[in-house]
Image 1 (cartoon, one colour):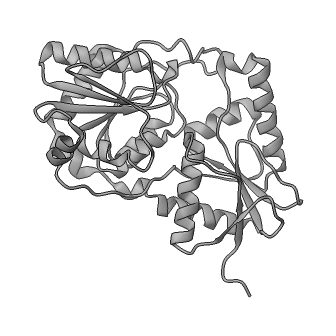
Image 2 (cartoon, rainbow, N blue to C red; image 1 turned 60 degrees about the horizontal axis):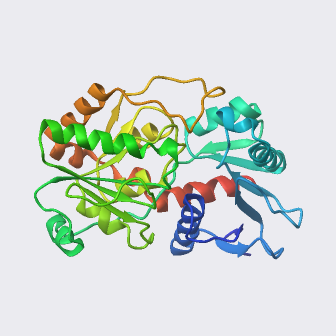
Length: 325
């Protein structure tokens, strides 16, 4: 009798948040001997795990990890509507559904209706990392020693609000000139300067050193579901400053990992345009940043990295999938 169930995975790469997470999940399942990963292209598995859409060729059960819903005015675009229709069909055929956050579940139920299928909310995870000297890493990476170093990372579409992050840096330095910003990810708006270090794409295997040399991860992205970059930052022991909209606050609050700034108003999720995000309330955001730095050691001490441990996420995924077969 087999010890472990066989879980089929789709083809994976190290490009894009969903693929990076699924690859980490697969590696953790192998490392912990929780299940036997298989290819979805062959019928030798018990249950499959897909994200966003399904490729089930053998009438085998599968679980769908929800990712990539287009909402707001985007949902009216024919191509994006097709993406949503594909996701709905995949949900209809799934044995179970995994949401990344409570916000993720609420949003999807607003568009598709509540499901009677087995479902669960499981936060994304990353490998827990521990670093040596912060100053030593900064020296190796040729980054400033004497400044409070913020870091942000994304695929920089407009709703990720990079201009607002840079504006916050400017406003903080107008009050006290001691802050600098690392920008990871390709973007054309900002080059490097005395206070901005625009480093482009960094390989996922190398990104931890940049988190480990920074002081605070800043995430002002509007209405993210469960951003992997925030999970990675917390896994590296980095406190986070984020806005109060979307699923990001659930990660930060669940891990006691920083400050959720009440800098944004609630919005109508059917009518909004993601590519016209509002400006945050600057006074509230600056007050939140100052409070985080004024109590920095306490915020670092309180971080619960286990909340974002990929090994815990893998255990939760496998436990849920075992229930379904």
